[in-house]
Length: 174
Image (tube, rainbow, N blue to C red; front, side):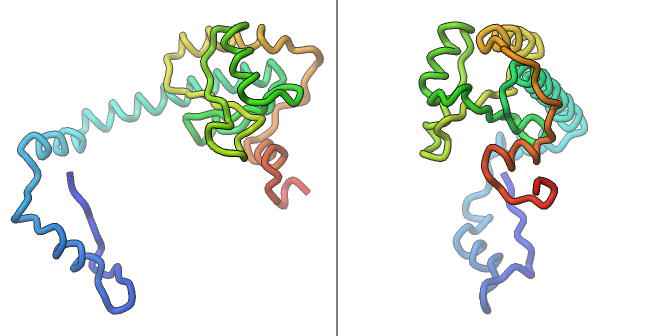
């Protein structure tokens, strides 16, 4: 492991790097050989390529899940900038009832928003860390579970959906 602290970073007259070095002398506790080799591997071109492939896969899965939620008429945010999608529970359903319904009707596991505090109530979270095949299967199950009743409006941008769902002020949404 390694830490880079700029020499110019300070708080008042104290330089943060000096404080860190005083508390963590590198000569007293160097990283183990295993940690040094792991860091070296993480910085290799092979690891960079693997990371790019992983990010691409997560983005593809997130886009698939987002399309499925849109097809089911479920407002959501997160697919463009996050590996998590936050979706609004349908028809005022609380997050645990939605969780139970998705487990029962779709065999899909989501995270009830209420586990993140009061602000999460009425929402659920879906992860995009699965495989593309799992995402396609989940989309079919979600569409069936939510049984789209009417034609949905054109897809919103993530900023528009966030403003509507979370009441943020954005000049583009006035």
